Length: 310
Image (cartoon, rainbow, N blue to C red; front, side, top):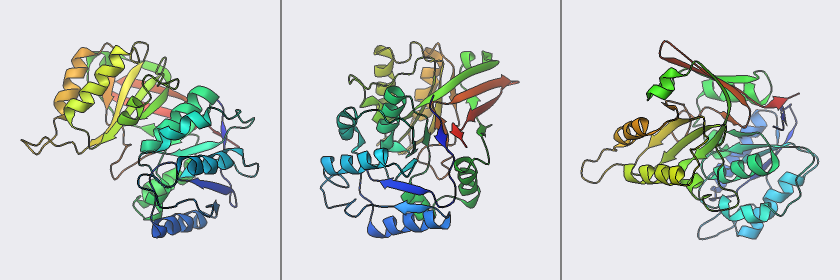
C-alpha cells in the first residue's frame, strides 16, 4: 500500500476531467475553492472541449490525465466531476510505466474505474471523496468540508464511521475485522467485469453505492459479481447511499427488499449506512488502506486509515 503525501499550503493540485464536462462557471468555482484552501489549481487550457459525451476526446482526456500523473511538481490529482468516460482511458493508462512515487487521486462515481486501476495495478491508496465542481458550488457543508481538509492536510490520520448497521447474522457475529476498503460505484464496477482490470475484492471490504438504478438492476449486478467469483474471498460488503431508482408502478424504490434478500443469501457480512455516495453528505472513504471494523452490542465502528504521510 503506497502512501500519498499530505497537502501543504501552496501545493499544486492537478485538475482533470476524465468523464463528463463541467460548465465554465463550475470550473471557475473549483479554482476559487482550491485558492480558498491556499492551494495552486493547475487547470490546463483546453481541458474541456465540446463533445457529444465527454469533457473531451478520449486521447485528449488521457493526455491531461497522463500529464497529471507524470508531473514532477505535484502529488495530488483531483477530478472535476464524474459522468461516463473514465473506463475508456484505462487501456491507455495500462500502457504507462508505473511512477516511482504515488500520487493521491480524489473523486467518486465514474472515477471508480481509475481508483480500481491505480489500486490493483500500481498498489496506490486513493480517496473516494467529493468532486471539485461540487465543492466549487458550495454543495458540501462546512462541517464536512472541514473534515476533508483535516484529512488531506494530515490533521487526522484516520476517519471513523459510527452509523453502520449489520444486515445479516454474519455481520452481527463479527467482533473485530482488520481489512481494507475497495470498490465505489456499483454500475462502474460492473463495467470492469471481464476486463483485465476486473474489481478484485479478495481479503477486502467491498464498498458499493449507486444513483438512479432500479432494484432489479442492482440485484442483477450483485448476482453477476457472485457468479464471477468477486464475492468468494470478499471479507464483507458495506453499502453507501443508493438513490433514485423508483419503480414505475409504485414511484418508490425497492432497495430495502433487494438488500434484505442479499442479507439472507450472503455468507459474508453485509452492512449499510456508510455516509458516502451521491447524497448530500459525501464523507471521504480511503481506499486500499488498513481499516478495522468492530461490532459490539449491535453497534458497528469502522476506522479507516487515511493513507497519507508527511
